[in-house]
Image 1: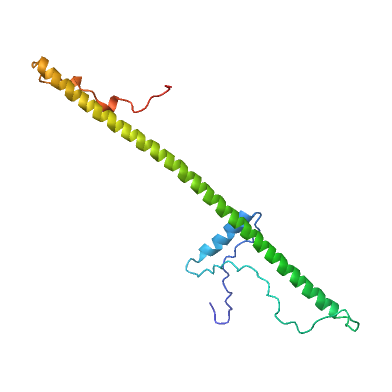
Image 2: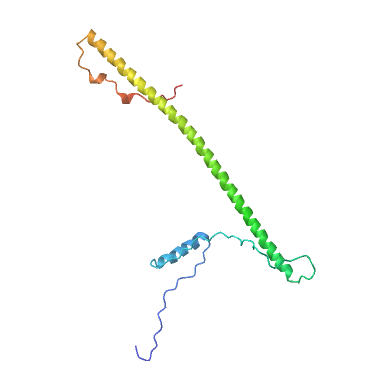
Length: 181
């Protein structure tokens, strides 16, 4: 190039203007823009604090009476004070309603928890009784086999070797009855 020729600046490839047609597309575009430069810090805003009205003044200096002589601007001051007081009362009623709902929810949770504990305790007792019943049946079965073995030894001493195919397998016994009454 010659010294007298001007250099034209090289333009970056501009991205076409995309108008999002839905909230999902808008979110996708925002994510794409964020992911173009992953090292860049992203500001994540915290949840704003709940609005709370100013407390009423402890001492009112300019008391407006019903006497004559109030200026034309006093009505607007009165209207503003009244609006602020109504907002404060509405806020307190809303807080009371939320507190009432929270209390109802907690009582319902406690009641459900107590009902669940009662059911669990009943089922626990039932399982314990069933377990004790099985243990007693097992002991009785052992004693019965011991007495049968003792009587069998007295009557015939020829069958001292047990056949493994004659053993009763515990896993084949069903632990529950299907379709029975």
